[in-house]
Image (cartoon, rainbow, N blue to C red):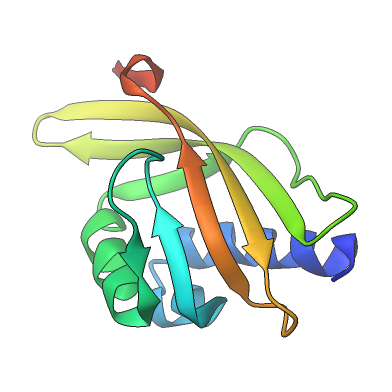
Length: 123
């Protein structure tokens, strides 16, 4: 897969998330995709689990790209962004880097979200 297509897909991921369009976002993933968010937690496997994850995490949250999407010499690309979210009466910001691999059909096959407790800021 070429870098231009991967980068376009990652921009579409951010745009769909911010539009709160779960169907549009889920269409970017392969049927048997795996999402590990954050890395170290159990993976969500398949569209049904991934859809449930996004339906829970999208409300009250937006993504702010901190750098343009980056490609590779393979089938992987990355985005670095801040998640802005409302948790009860508090606003939080989480800085995240997602590494995604793509299958031969151009769909996201895996997503690994890198962030830890010290990447979460209460505003």
